Length: 135
Length: 232
Image 1 (cartoon, each protein chain N blue to C red):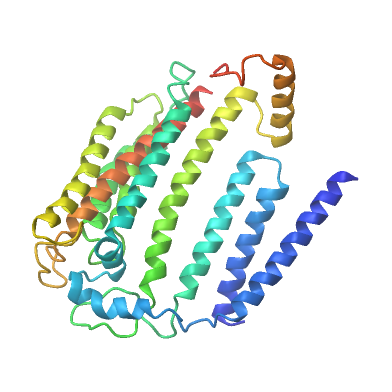
Image 2: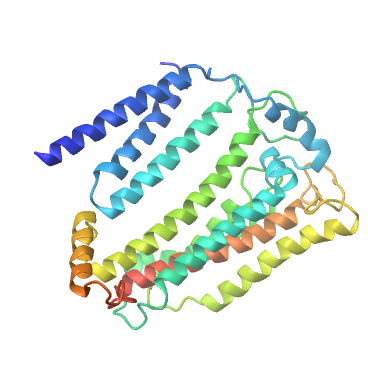
């Protein structure tokens, strides 16, 4: 296999594994890890697309002019994407911490069941979702 | 059984998605970099900004406004995470101190991590790295001691002050460009000598602001999450 095939296969593989983790897994942390894997796959694909054969990294060395370099634009975009991915990850984990504090479990079906029980217990017209929960 | 049907449907969907992606990538030959704009930027960036690191030239010179938006997204995410976690866990049982080895290593590493982070931030326009990468290392320098001894207080107030001033500094540097009837965030100070530490105009200053902001933000965020977990 050529380098390109390996990189593309890796990007698609990461993307698909991440999708599977997001759709099929029932554990919230695993769902978030799936999101991270999808991000990694997309980032890898973007950087791989900017690759050029026999090209240097897009950093000028002393006395060297801009010759053959890999495409710097996807790298800058991926840098942005990584930072934003970190922000999303941090927010998701904070929400997971709160879910665990409120329901004592991270199983999505279990959380959904507890929420349904809660809604029926509070009845129509009663106060909405319990604010603050017990923490 | 319902569970197996669900898994089978998921796998079928993912197989189809994989085949679709492979079909798309067939039309994208590897190693040729079909985009034209990248080569134009590589040719023009050294003359435009004076930065050796072309990625930095794009991030701060050409797309400075986007980077401001990116930093804002990070700030919003950190603020939202802080809001969600709130002070919910104050007074909860704190985790035990880590063992002697981690404890000593954390304080031994602290100065080295600071120096490495500062180096990467300040040489962002010359070498690989920059404000985001160096900022992450600075955050690690302050966060590893918190991991080693969870009881040690993390100064959220100072972190917030540094973050606020760094963010304001980024915008102020952008506003200074307006004085000379340039666009917002246009690099100024001249290009300097390529390869020197003081070159590429105001880009190193922008990266310094980003490094401080990202560092304080990440450290505060991680300290908050770990504090919430300890108290949960």
